[in-house]
Every structure is written in structure tokens, then in C-alpha cells.
Length: 325
Figure (cartoon, rainbow, N blue to C red):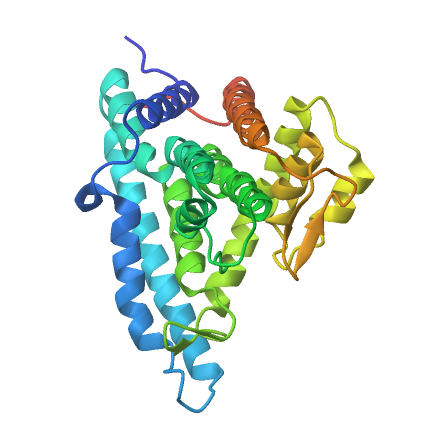
């Protein structure tokens, strides 16, 4: 019996990972590789970033941040590559099962979906409950946000994390296999934990987290724009010039793309007080817009899966990937 073509194994593994994610959600913390990554970054972060009351430094924290980022990234990528190599030597059905289970923790669509619903449900109880639930998702101060601003932030988080937690890991999985997806999750987690300007939790992060922030920007650059295109396609098209204009309003070079696409697709205004406003001509978001946003995101995930399959089919037909067992 001939071995199954590698693209077919990878696509089947992706389908299995998405199915397991939607059915079971996140694995326990002790078994979650992203939690392991966070543990490493947390311990190292205590060492690389100077205390808030120390004399400001540049090069020492920057070099330390870059070195420990590269060391962690190398371990993650090599470990994932070794696992994938051994898994792909097994019979196709076993390889699909194991590779899908290894990929699943690097995706978080069900958790993302559930958190957006949880914020809306909490808002239905009280503004205070909505603010408290939102605080689990975003770094901004939620204490003074109105109902509409809480909902805006939740929809923005959904759009931004649609890229970070689903589209980008799948993009790198298509491109580089399990090592690519694992490396992206390392970079994204490092940015979330280190990529701050100024002081956070009693430490100076401006330079200590700069490498991590730039690495995440680089790895998210194309996936963020792909996410915007996916949202535009499932929405039936969006005004390109308005998307280009609004995508550049956010401090991040990437997060504005899926957020602006979501705002335009829903016809609503989204923003962060004192920082940016997206789709200024849009209306204030209502409770039903959370459900509409989730519906659009779900369709984007489906379209992304189809596009991944088409990409692997193109590589298969072009003879650029050989079957392996």
C-alpha cells in the first residue's frame, strides 16, 4: 500500500484539530504546551526586565530579551519538528490522529467563541459583570467603560484573536507544518507577556520586550491581512479604501486589519477610548452584533479551512511535497 500523500495527512490533521477544539476545548493546563511556554517566559521575564525603580536601560534588557526569545523559540521549533518527523513515519491514520492532537492546543477557536459569548451574557446581567468579564480578555482598564464600549472591546478582541488564535497558527502550519504553528504560538505568547511599553507589574518592558513585539509583528503581518480578506469575503465584500484607511489607525501594524474588517462588515463603530476609532460612520454596536460577529468569524474559519485545503492540493499537484508514512 502506498503511503498517503503528505498534504492529505496535514489537511486531515487540521480538520481533526479543529473538530477536537470545537468539541472539547482546551486541554488541562498541565498538558497545554502554550501554558508551558508561558511558564518559561514568566520565569525568564523576571530576570530580563529591570525593576520599575531602576535606572532606565536599553541594550542589556534588549539583548537579554532577544537571546532568551531565540533560545525558547529554537527549543519549541526543534521539539515540534522532531515530533512531526516521528509522527509522519507512522501509518497514515495514526499520523493524522497524533498530528491533529498535537496541533489542537495551538488553536483556540472554541475558547475565543465562548469568551465573546460570556462577555455578552455578563452584560445582560449588569454593566459591572460585563466589565469584570471583559477584564479577563483585554489589557485596557475596563472600570469606566459603558455598555457599548464593553461590547466594542469584546468584538475587537474576537476579531484580533481570530487571527492570533486561529488564522495565523493555521497559516504557519500550512507553510511549515507543526514547527511553524508552534513557533508562531511561542512568538504570540511572548508578545502578550513581554511586548509592553513602559512599566508593567513593577518592571520596565520598553526594551526587554521589544524583540518579542517585533517578532510577533513580523509573523502576524501576512496572516492579519489574510484574516481581513477572509472576513471581507464572507461579508460579501468591503470597501477597500475604507479598510486600508482604518487598518492603519491602531498602534499595532496588524491588529487594525481584522478589527477594521469586522467593523465594516457589521456596519458598526469600534474603538479604544483616546486611542483610535474604526468605521466612524458606523452605528453603536448592539447585543445582536455580538452574535453577528461570531457568525462572521465562524464562516471565516470555515473559509480558511477550505483555503488551506486548496493550498495543500496545489502543492500536491505541483509535486512540491512528497508523500511519507
